[in-house]
Length: 142
Ligand code: HEC
Image (cartoon, rainbow, N blue to C red):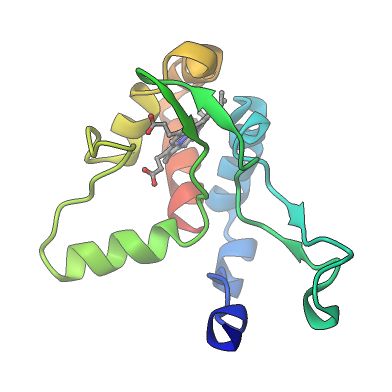
């Protein structure tokens, strides 16, 4: 399936890297322990076809199973999140997050994190409203 192999991954806009609010949100994302499961980088295997070997990607997932709602689910990748949100908004569709679409906002998705992610949710809830907004802006920039 050469077609699938060459499909590109969601790229972040360059402007996002220079945005001070997004940068703060990035720090808050790490501080709240989100990256404990939404691992920032992954590297492709060194036995993959040559052109795809040892490539560092930023999918924001550890690709592992965790119980944060009612049952174990694989940590979803967060790359492309902002682009998907924009696309849904432009088409008048509702944002449905988590495995069953129980959250319709990013804040709601974070509030739906219990279980193994309870500490992370508590860290987010303890932030100032401007730090929370920065974290959300960071997620939207992915
Ligand atoms: C213990 C691991 C863990 C931690 C810590 C964690 N998450 Fe998650 N996250 C998950 C899992 C697993 C899901 C999917 C759970 C489900 O649907 O039941 C998820 C879902 C999400 C979603 C919804 C994605 C989608 O496409 O539906 C967002 C957004 C998200 N997490 C952001 C965060 C943020 C922000 C933090 C930090 C405040 C965080 N997560 C901390 C494991 C984690």
